[in-house]
Each structure stands twice: as C-alpha cells, then as structure tokens.
Length: 169
Ligand code: FEO
Image 1 (cartoon, rainbow, N blue to C red):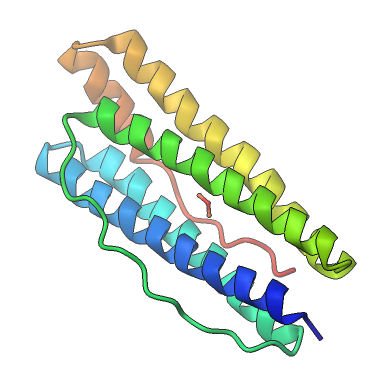
Image 2 (cartoon, rainbow, N blue to C red):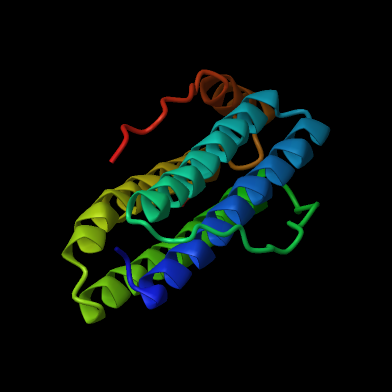
C-alpha cells in the first residue's frame, strides 16, 4: 500500500506528464505549420513518450493499491518564434520535469517508500536521456544557424524517429 502523500505526489506527476504530452503535440502542430514535418514527427513521438510516462505512473499507483486520479492541466502554448525557440522551450521544460522527478524521489525517501524510490530510478535515467536528446538537437540547429539547406537536413533526420514503448516496471 502506498501512503496518501506519495499517492497524491504521483497523481500530480500524472498531470505533469500529460501536460508535457500535449505541450509537445502543440509543438508538433506549430512545426507542421512552419513546414518542418520531420521536427513535427520528433515531437509527435515525444507526445507518445510523455503519455507512456503518465500511464506508467498511473498503473504503478494502482499496482500499489492506491487511488489513481487524473488531475487537470493547463492548455499548452500554441506558437513559438522558430524551430530553435521550440527546442529551447522543450529543453527548459525537461529541466523542470527533472526537478519534479527529483521532488518525487525526495518524497519517496521521506515516506520511507523504497519501492517508489526504485520505481522512480527509471524516470531519473529517462530525464538524463531526454535532456541530452533535446540538447543535441539545439546544438545541431545552432550549427546550421539560418541555412535553409542545413535545416532541411536536420528535419530529414528528425523524421526518422520512431516510438519504442518503455518496458513495464
Ligand atoms: Fe516525461 Fe519528458 O518527461
């Protein structure tokens, strides 16, 4: 059985993960609008990943005999300045999510909940990967600067990203 405090913290994170999902789907819509379908594909995959994060936490709360709840989340932003602005916003967002995961780890420790602490390790590692992958795209965008040809090449590469569902906990 999970404590009420841990359960509430996980339920709040479900909302944060769904918010992330729809933020990235909104970014995909914007990237389609500025004719970068590959980058939009990358964000659609990100959307699927975030949904899977929310679901992974949702299922975990249930598995621990807690009461899973879906909180409300705010509507995502709709427009950005350009592709660089999108990926920089995504990077800043992932840093916020990393801090939220860190907060959950602290709660698990305070609640003496070893199972939740172990469960959260997957998310701790995932955040390292997520921050690094967005940062790599920002670095590529910086390299091509305003070159349309360079942007086209990056977009083609981002088009190849596919979704791999995470292994169950
Ligand atoms: Fe679910 Fe991108 O953190």
